[in-house]
Structures are given as structure tokens and as C-alpha cells.
Image (cartoon, rainbow, N blue to C red; front, side):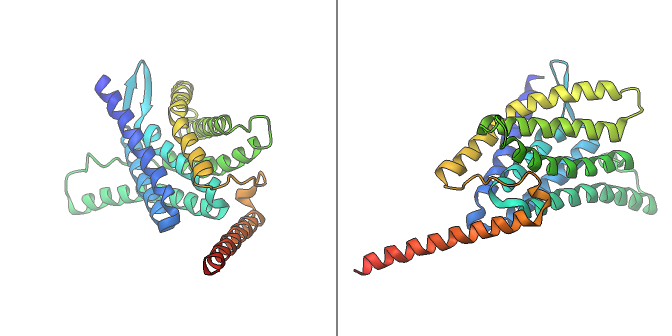
Length: 270
């Protein structure tokens, strides 16, 4: 058990760091590589989740897909929404949702191909469940949109301190995911209530573990890198006007940067 737990923690730390590091390179390379990484992690998450890979710790079951990979996707969408705006976030959400929908189709195609050629079934390729995968895709889109809305809403309340705002938003998204996914995938089954209880507890523990990574990154980008945390309308993720405001804000910053550079050049010439 200790070995499995250490592997789980190490894997989570590596993937969390990788996602946030990829986002930190956007000023140099843009966001294309970040979106590619998000798509790759989504594929791994879907595959591991369908395979039912779990780790038992102290009587609590941790689904490796949601513990490591889904949480890293939340951190990535969190960062891109806060520092890059609604438009970039919608691309990230579309990437995650698109790959989530494609992975089970690929698995199903592989099984059909093996059937056609008369080969042995692919035991290491999980057979997708339409109900579970449909619930997963729909829940993922709802989660990521809720993340942006909850973040802006909390910014207008007394819970607007950065660490508290980040933790409540992250935990809220995780618990919403449990509610929507478990209801969509398992409602009506005898294990529905037990799945809900166990997953809510495991997600609470995951939020406590993942929040420091998110907080430190947000604080680093905001204070040391000079990337401000924008205050947007609560429904900015759904409104084009918020995107226009962000573009105008970025344009104004670029104008000020160029004016400052020209002023320094003039001083050097003198």
C-alpha cells in the first residue's frame, strides 16, 4: 500500500507541475503546446478511468484517472482562464471535451477491428460504456464552465482571498463533478449512494493536496511575473463582451509597454 501511495503522490506532483509549467511558457511559445498537453492528458485520463485503475488508502478508494489526470486538467483550465481569458478557456474546454469523446470511440473501433479479423479480444483496451462516457463528457464541460463562474462569483464575496478563493472553487468543481457524473453514470444502481459518499471524501482530500500547487502558481504569476488577476463578470465564460474587454485590456497593456520602450530609447539617444 505504501508503495502504491508513493507512486500516486509522485505521479500527481509530476503531472500537476508539468501542466502549470507548460502554461508558464505561453509568453514564449503561445498556448498551442499547452492545448496539446491538455489533450494528451485527457486521453490518458479517459483510458485509465475506463480501465478502472484504483488505489486503496486507509479504506478510501482513489480513482487514478480523477486523482491525477482530471485534477491536473482542472489546474490547467484554472490557470488559462485567470491569465488568458474566456476565449482561450473555451478552446481548452473544447480540447478536453473533444478528446474525451474520441477516446472511447477509438477503443470501440479497436475492438471492432479485432472482431472483424478474428483476432483475440484486446483485454488491455477497456470496452467503453456509452452511459458512463456520455456522463463523463457532459460533466467535464459543465465542471469547467462552473469553474470560471464560481471563481468570478467568489471574487465578489468575502471569500476573495486568493488561497481561499482557489480552494473553494477547486473543491466546488470536484464535488460538482461527483454529483453530476455519479448521477449520470450510476443513478439507479445499488452502489450509487456508496459511490457518492466515497468519492466526495476522496475529492476533498485531493483538493487539499492540489490547492497549494494552484495557489503558488497563481501567486507567482501575479506577483513576480506581473500577470494581473482580472476581475470579470460572473458569466464571462459565456459572454463575448468579456472576451472583447480582455482583448482591449491586453491591447492597452501592449501600447503602454511600447510607449515605455520608446521613452527609454529616447533617453538613451539623448
